[in-house]
Length: 459
Figure 1: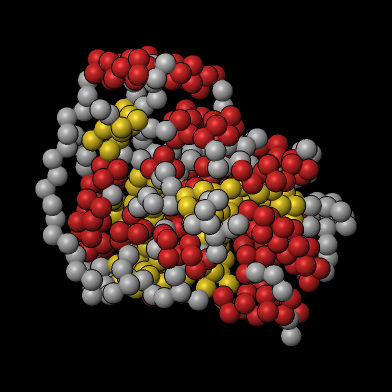
Figure 2 (figure 1 turned 90 degrees about the vertical axis):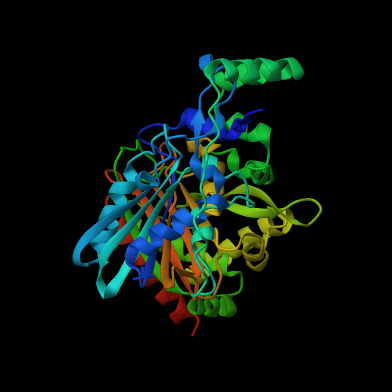
């Protein structure tokens, strides 16, 4: 019996377009390992048995009689998926981000397992980077593992497991896939109707049928009755991306929270709101008292039995960019988020870390899945926040210094913002359409300026 993709995963593959690849990216900056990037490559290869999906590819059923299936890739080539790259020494942040932008722009090859990792040498201060690309179809919940989780250790001296010989199972023939699909229809006749419906519907209906992704929106129905405000963030998206990053000290964010109330997540949203306000003004956009930007904010929620689960609900939050007072912006956002999190029983940062370990790409992928299931007319941008461990992590004896998420763009969305906290800092990753939001580096610089302003207001 083959393992079939879920209806939701299949819909993401069907609806993915060259202009809007769905892969979630990550940029891990590390000290140079004692054994160089070859040690990182060996570690990834040795730990692939922990993520068997990373050696499987998607196989289509002839005639699209059923959703695709996962099969072992008999021609799996680790050298294709783990590649080496270099910057002219001493490599700067700008050069690294230019490389990340080019890599993010390229879709993954559907004929191979849906992930890639690039080991980048030549960074200044004797550092290296690992740039990852992972398709959300590989991530079916918080219980899923990804490369980040198996690559990083709490102990710098964690041993590299011995390499295991892998023997792929023979992929089923086209006739076998057709027979399996027909057998499934005999066992469950309603699947025929679902398959036909899935061929003509879109991910919005699919996500609603699977459940979870739209749960939060049912509680914000009043907001969804209106289309998202007009914004330069919504436009036709081209094939090229521009990636930018920013940083903030977690102690500064906690100082702001202590002085003005709310949560660290509220403070982060207030920081993003203030930066967006200044960015819009820098572009000559009209910003008045009632101007807002609507963000889709995926949150990890508890199930009804109050235990953390793999449910990610999406909430629409109007960011008050028209409010000139940063403290008032934070108060308004705290009030809005308080109603959402208390009603939806959100999973706290500590519980989430305990449940998932270090899995930023997994959680950002779940946020991207939720975003892709909604109409682009409902929101202007996606903002994801994934808490991480507040202690150092290591790969091949090398300490990870920074980690930046790269969240994919949905159709008609010119900007997405991902945030990940790690070891006392919060790291912002901005993924933007190169033509529509080419000045995304200005927005990244404004993030740090907004944090400084809020810290000053906190006394």
